[in-house]
Length: 248
Image (cartoon, rainbow, N blue to C red):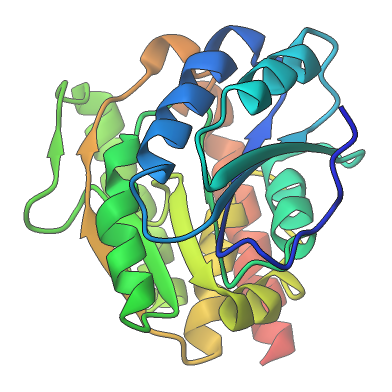
């Protein structure tokens, strides 16, 4: 399928970064498109392929043929590795009025698109899903070690992001102006990516609206290990803090 890189008719562009996600991608796209069809706007779902060697492209083709009225699906590539690079590619390859990104595992339910779209329509420049605000809940409680790790991570990053309660929920949306201003400045591709996005927003004076999430932790699909990746997370956050300090 040959998709144009941009379409000025799109109101909302939902970016999904993927790498070898053929098994989860079909249900994810189906659920996103079903909810997108309920929104009072024209929606594009942009799948950014980060070098997959499975049937990702074919799955996107199949979903595109089933897209409801007022929605479309497109596939673009990203040669640079890392979620951050793929998201940045998708966000800056869009001309939509509003743009955002979601994780392919649907840990955040697509129903959150409705309150997020309402906040964007009301003029909020940055709207994110949050597991740490009133009304949010974990469908399945997190293990103690993850809760402790999350608490330590928030303490380490709060001063960078202006006190955002949840930096890591993979459901973040922006006005076009905010997206252009933020993602032209973001350089991280790994664990520090979401923190840098919100840190840049804070430095630009853009308020962040946190919308409560009913979160399902897809532990079976995650490769993250606190013990294995913890030192790398700390290193990346320290490097980000230093970089932001030099840019001040």
